[in-house]
Image: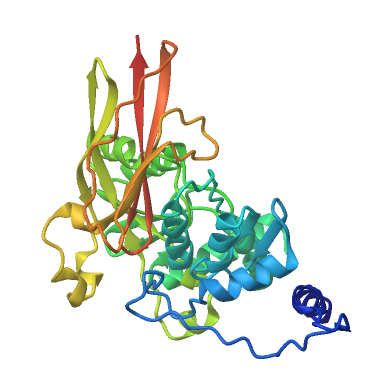
Length: 368
């Protein structure tokens, strides 16, 4: 910090030093108090984020300690002020935060910057979970660690262990329970195996608990469950499960996955994606003050985007519509997309709801 502040101080000494009218060189004294306005509720800059810093502060710091093209990093980004200012000042940036709402707030903020260059959002949550698993269950064999992890999640979900199956780990009332791994998404194959074991055990209801989910999973597994005559519930294991205080307080809630429905339109202008429905199953868990503001299903959506050529790797934001403070409207049909080459394409649609949760949907396009 001393080196960093010295660089800032040196910059301002150079800026504010000079010769007086007698030609005598004098050094200006730089005050150690920076007098600048905060972020007030009615300002255009204001976001609903408690720790937001004024852009004037970050502008002064970034200008004093970097030049255009330099890389600026902020590893606890909050509302994204540092990265937003760095973008406006022609700097490259890397930023991160543990809070989902922080990432959601920052992402929308970047999109509203005129001429903002493309950026990627990468989820490295599995590394945090792997570290938690090591701390929580110790350095044991993979089998021992997995067994203790499954017992821990079953206890959180208030289910009892049910040995004898590789894919059915427990039971809660009349529901069988499958638990996804710590460092890998729940796949279509995992759920297929769990459904087969549920049918073999002559049960009619299956709950799958997971940290992450294979992209576009919801529709296909619902169809498989319906064919098997089994009622399927997909529930997310919340990040709070890694917080000992929340666990000790018994404050862990498992949420059903939201899902969306789309329609593909094809015309001479190209393909268009239309959102036709978005469902959040756990409406009872939504605060009453939020429910009062919801008039239709699309009011739950804050932002959605399309990757027209998804390659089973990083999602590339190629079109988006989002609400702003000034304009609360949302386009429900994308702009048209024309493909240069014939072929089979995967289109991924990503919806971010008003709580900052991501829901994805895969569409298979055959362009002939």
